Image (tube, rainbow over all chains, first blue to last red; front, side, top):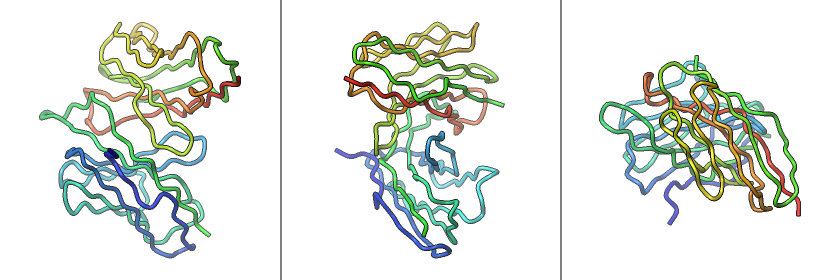
Length: 117
Length: 114
């Protein structure tokens, strides 16, 4: 029944070694988001896709990239992870209606906990 | 800009105690307001929402009323259970700005002890 699935649940990488986190959804939602959540902090939006259109937050480091090859899948690529990138990464989806208003909920995956050694 | 402020935690309560978690916001336009809950080791899930002033959202015994005059959306529950132990996030989206912005507060950790 899982609707937003993130793999892996835990990911360990080495300092500077590229890593990819994946997210898939069975909801057919048109918007997919990536959030970074550090311990005891609010989730921070990194970027999102509205269909195929990529929208980056102004303060998201260039080290973070994303791909959405189709409606169901979205990937987060960290090109050169630093110690400060250790965090929980949350994928979320939503359906945004024509006109762009979001007043419905986000559906979150369980997250991927990234450790950088 | 838009922002959300929550009372600091952690909050520790005994089972069956009354819960209030304060949330205030700053926003342009007429935001929709949400409470999300995050159980240990899981992602966030929507607890309740309100989309216009004076609306009351409710779910699983939790309630929150959208108060435009005080720009608040306080979360309440009359009798908490151990299973309510989690982190609670107040959030908003503004219908007058870009649809994509879901602004989360810093979260309030709740521990309920038997």
